[in-house]
Image (cartoon, rainbow, N blue to C red; front, top):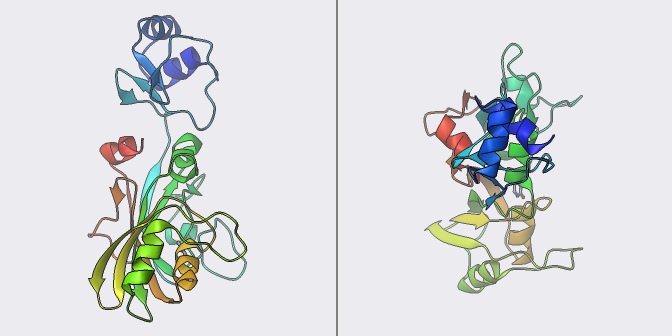
Length: 230
Ligand code: URA
């Protein structure tokens, strides 16, 4: 879609007013002012008008507190999926912005907005994800420093990006990573000779799991949560 059309669709401005707003420097694309009405807006673009993020009307955004045993998929023949936790047709058209393993609990974001979920999951954006990790062994200082610096995972040439770690208890840490590789947290801990007993995602970028949501519950995101994803 062209930029002027995107603005006319997502804001109260007409196509003519959108063109004027673009020419006047009021419109940003991916953090840069954009003065070309014909600019192509793809699925990953972040468009702002006077600093406010624009999203296609009718898009929906949910957070869910995923229980153990539920799979992060839209369909599965053997296990319940996160969409099965949403009553009626609430789940219609939603996709998952960042999957969790079946035995991982915590924050899952669901949306109909492909541009928004791309910003959450794209490796280029490096959106931080924070996990509470219960370990089988206490984490040694050496292992902690190795994880902070980046470790090499089995069958992968590139080391992980530096992680942030906070010790919470003897066998419990808070770990923040900016990538989303396959089974990344479990493989990172395996790379330093430890083992993940339990894994819980607390936040994705600026969005934190609502402490009022019991396991299996969900709620709509607030406008400021939606707009907080840069
Ligand atoms: N890392 C994992 O190993 N599992 C998850 O579910 C999420 C991150």
